[in-house]
Amino acid sequence: MSLWGTLTGKKPSSSSASPSTPSSSSDPNSRDTAPTTSFTSTPFDPTTAQDVSSFIGAASLPDPSQLHPLAGLNRQTLDYLSLEDSALSDLPGSRSALPSRGWSDDLQYGTGVTYLGALTLGGAYGFAEGLRKSPASAPPKIRLNSVLNSVTRRGPFLGNSAGIIAMVYNGINSTIGHYRGKHDSANSVVAGALSGMLFKSTRGVRPMMISGGLVAGAAGVWAIMRKTLF
Image 1 (cartoon, rainbow, N blue to C red):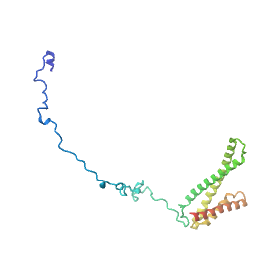
Image 2: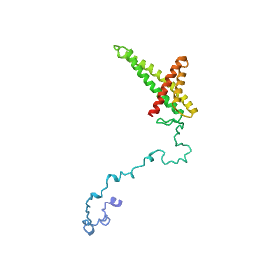
Image 3: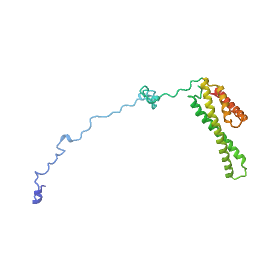
Image 4: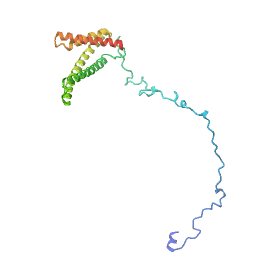
C-alpha cells in the first residue's frame, strides 16, 4: 500500500498486487523423478591388500644422518664455524680406550676423577670413624653430630690432598711425555715420585721419600692397569 492510499483509506487494486508464483502443478518438469543411476559395491579381494611392510620399508624411513643439526651444511663455505673436533694426541702410547687430546685433558679429567674419588673415600672413612667414636648409648643427635664432624674433616682433607697431587702429577707427566716424545709407564712412575716428594717437601727428607714412594707406586699400578685393562 502506498502513502496516498494510507492517507485516503483506499485499498490497493488487484493489478498492483505482487504477481503470484506459478503453481507447481502447471509445470510438468517440477515433479520428482526417480534417479536413474544405481550403485553397486565391488567385492573385496584380500590378495590385493597392502601389508605393513609397504609403508614401513627402508625407503620410507628418514635417514638418521639428516637429523643432525649440521646436516646439509657446506663445510667449505663456513669460515666462522669449525666442524672438526680437536685432533687426539699423536704421541705414542696416548691412544687407548681413554683417549686424550693433550695435557689439558689429562689435567682436567685426571685431577677431577682423583679429587672425587678421594673425597668419597675420605667421607666413607669419616663416617665409619664417627660411628666408632660415638658411644652406642648416645642420643641420635650426638651420634649424628659426631658422624658429620668426622665426614667433613676426613673427606675434604683427603680430597684436597689427592687433587693437588694429581694436578702436579699430570703436569709433570705431560711435560716429560712432551720432551721424550712418548707416553709410557716410566713417565708415570717418575712423575708420581716427583709430585709426591714435592707435596711433602716442607716436612723433611724422610716424609718426602715416603710420599714420593707411595705416589710413584700408585702411578705405577695405574699405568699397569691402564695398559692391561684398557
